[in-house]
Length: 114
Length: 115
Image (cartoon, rainbow over all chains, first blue to last red; front, side, top):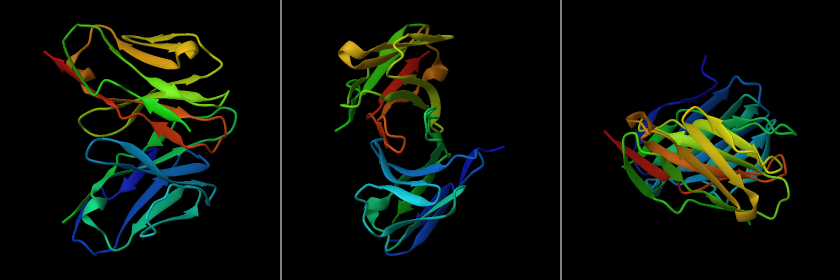
């Protein structure tokens, strides 16, 4: 059973289009995240949701809009895609609290904007 | 502000050599958590270890060992008798004491193990 799954795995699209990436976790975690990994492999947090509530929003352009319909899902919608949005996007989940769990990552979505 | 530094951008070793990956962190929190992740060429991010700031015991897991030194704010990772399958990018990461604190990643060290 996949713990954190995100779709699609690859996404190729043209500038100006709108696209979505979906993420689901079956670990029962309360917190979910989106991270962006650029071409130099830097991993940068974009958003964090705890139980459907936005907790972290890291100065991301408002073309990026996360949506969490329930605590097991965190989707990422991107409007008016730009060349610079090309990257690998990782979804992750963890359980906050005293026994902080590590981040469990999905396998990533490679977004290519042409 | 919190920060993680991995000064080694790329390392190449010959198979069976030992290799140490350095990680230095900065935080003002008294309680924090440190992590190591592995990203093999296939691209997934694999959790390796978590260490709490109040537990300075070193840890060994098979060929992997971790040395946590609060005095120097370092959390180094050693692979003994490296193998080709160890070739990957390794990330050190830091999380502050607030439960919802973001996990900050270092820039990663790309390890190549040559047969």
